[in-house]
Amino acid sequence: MAVEEKRLEEPIREDENSQDTNPEPVDLEAAEADDSVDSEAAETEAAADDGAADKKEKKKPFFGKDKKEKSNKLQEKVDELEDRVKRQMAEFDNFRKRSEKEKSAMFETGAKSVVEKILPVVDNFERGLAALSEEERKQPFAEGMSMIYKQLIAELEKLEVKPIAAVGCEFNPELHNAVMQVESEEYESGIIAQELQKGYTYRDSVVRHSMVAVVQ
Image 1 (cartoon, one colour):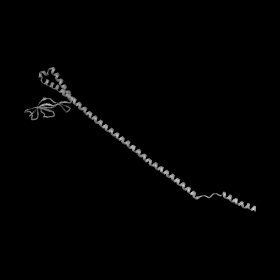
Image 2: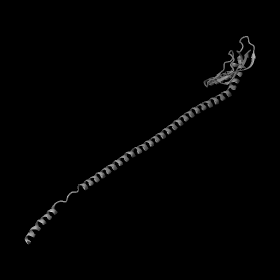
Image 3: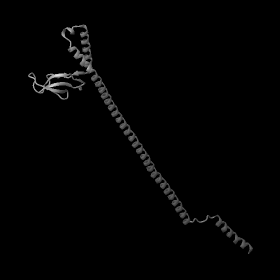
Image 4: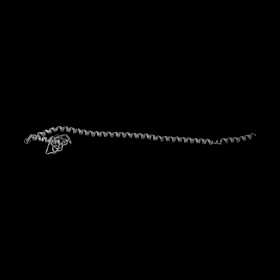
């Protein structure tokens, strides 16, 4: 009996050992759950990466727009400065032209004033020479006075000072100053018959009007 019990125990021990050596059964549901969790985590990470990429893509247009706005503002500032410079250049050019005109007008006024003061001297020369007789004109003194008079007239002509034509010309109120009316068989009515004082022009502007007598 004791021997049989031992024999019976030995197979039982072998069974226990065999049970210990056999691998434990795999839980398929748990494995599938783990796989689903892993896939969900991967999808979440991928979604997070996609969201980050979208944010970066959204930020790029924002910064590009800001840069474009700065560029537009800079261009507007440049255009404004260019317009201001052009306006100042135009104003300076107008100022230069106006200054030249004023300078020329002042020179003309000054020259006319000087010529007007010289004309009485010319008148005195003409009166003095006209009062000389034929014999006196041959005297050295008279010849010297005549030469000075001619030189003075020549210098006035170089300055574009010219006498106004009067006798035999039609009366022109812009050039002549009628101080009297006369009767004449030689000239028609409205024609200048006599010049009482010679008039002069300086560069086509009247310095002194001619004093004349006009035929009625």
